[in-house]
Image (cartoon, rainbow, N blue to C red; front, side, top):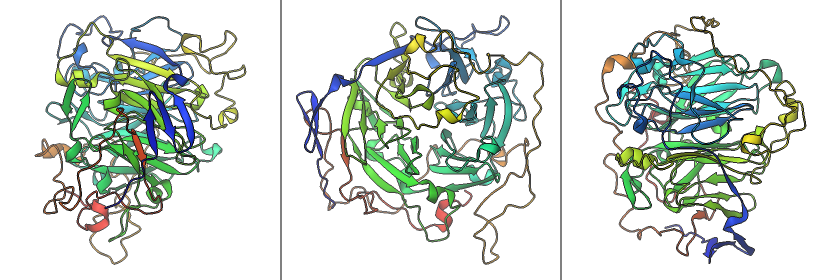
Length: 551
């Protein structure tokens, strides 16, 4: 059994890290940017907004956000029926609470809500997370699954649509080959890695890392070569011991695998966490970029540390390596820097921070950390109080360090010195926005460049002329139907975990230590960072090419 060094203790409302003085919990002020009781939309006059099947406000849950220069984008996946639009925006200059959501880019991209959607159309089914790259383009990861918490209907294959925020038109569509999609796949989070991107390529040579939550794994897309592959590891699976989460007096059970994702671009490290775990793990981008793993080799995942409870949202400062996380049971947001071992509780609020679904540190906002919170557990348990604020966008200033790359984006940045302004006063009166918001005109068609295709998948590891099953994949069809659609609903909502192996934890191991706010730490870093062990987490039996075989 590996011993843990209790590096942090709480002392009467303050935090002590080794010989560091206690840091006050109220050191950072938290601002409420926007808040809603229930999310509402700018429906066209002829839309059936009165139909619960089309729009049920108690089923619309925000899970992701991205902060742009002039707008904030919000992702509302189709967890349940009654979600009219899966990506929306609000202007940054609006005043007051509960602004009406504007379907992005317009309602023609959300026909899945009216069941008039064809998978070959340019549109969206269910988006969990969004990201904006340095070329001012919005990457929308479409899981393609409707009612994922009800009957899990695979409406369309997963894809990515890339929107140019200057024109609000689709400039690229990325369809995933069936070899990296499982029957139970649910793509929920995305990182756009531009560390090796060349300016002249206009962000079309980036690497993209995508979480598959229900069929746990990370899908890697090399946009420069238009290649896709998939890797997996036991750390990406849910831990049954943490299936039940607790937020205040509410308890709910959700066996989600890898979903939290954050990127330290200085160190080239991707941090991740399943929902059903108390751990944070890491893997280098070099390992992810290396392609599918050869037979017998495992992905070099490292255990970063243990939290006080489960969580979803993860973030990393653009510079400095500080990790931001939000343990559910503590209703708090905390930070830990693996380079300096500095650990702080940034804010704690039992009303406003009940379920932090997404944490963002956009370079466009200097030192700010944005937090999207919702009472997801109340939506999930169907005991929502519509008279309370149930969704919030929060902001904490002075906790992140900008990357310093904003000055290179001269065609995107405001025309006045970039200062960290607050909330509704974000823009100085003299700021000229890059391009005004112009929705696509009704009936206007979108011209897309033809996608590269190939008739035969390519593998760099098929060295012995064996029948091809694993490796790098290019798209065999661009807008055609995926083979997964003809297989019906998945027989099981989750994979069988570690069939035939020992129970966890082993009988020789004492029960796990409990962490929490009552005088004990909420995060415990790993004792020996050079030892690549998962602290008694079970390893699966050896399978070929890291479990990328078709199921």
